[in-house]
Structures are given as C-alpha cells and as structure tokens.
Length: 160
Picture 1 (tube, rainbow, N blue to C red):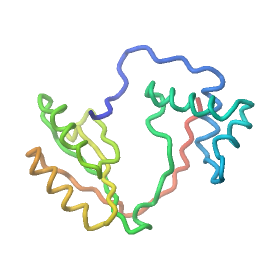
Picture 2: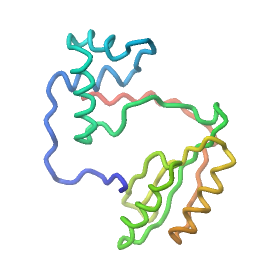
Picture 3: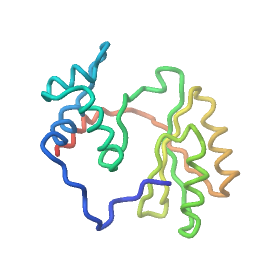
C-alpha cells in the first residue's frame, strides 16, 4: 500500500521519552558493538526498553522507518525518484504491483495529476531502466523517471 497523507483521525499521544528518542536520534546513531545499549544510557533506560519504544513508534506509524541512509550511487547502485498518474479506481491495485518490486524503497500518494511517487534503489545503476519497464508493463501506467542531477544537503530535523 502507498503511504497516504494523514486524514482527520486522531493521532497517538507521545510521551516525553518518545519525544526525546525521536528528537535525539534524528541526528545519528552510533556505530559500535552495542549501539542500543549506549543510546539507552543517554535516556536513563535499558536497551530493551529503547528497542521496544522504537518498535512501538514504528508499529503506530509515527516513524516510517528506523535505519541508516545510504548513498546507493557511491556504492555502485542506482537511485531515482519516479512518479505515475494512476486512475483513482486502480490506485490500490497499482500500489500493490509497484510495492512487489524489491527495488521500491517507499511509495507515497499525492494530491496531483502525478498521484503516486516512489523511490527506486537498485544494487546496480543499470537495473533502474529494467525495473521501470517491468512496472510499466505490469501496470499499464507510464513512469516519469526523475534521476538526481545534483544533491543538496538540507539537514532536516523535525522536532516533536
């Protein structure tokens, strides 16, 4: 399923520990033998509590992912942003077809003529074209491929 924008439904409440975890871990995560234990000490909790809190935030959809960000291109891989104009009555069907591809990193619905946006990340840059062709053949929808031309560092931090 594509991630849809928030609706009018109520949002889960965040306690102060949740907020600290979200705010402090946006800036990075240590690379060491026991990173969760090291971070948990900063919050004055144990490692399992930290892991449980992160898992709960993921399960609630408050966090969409927890993990490293890689520069796929620097490792020989391919990365591109794609957009499609999907008929409303086929949106879920097409989203399922798109999401079946391991190269699809994430998929979002947008209120626009191009209403489905997703990122493709492949191990080899040459695989991007074949994944796009496969999705187009499977769905019958044209994909607009928007490869990165230049990278800009934004340094986004969303404080809660």
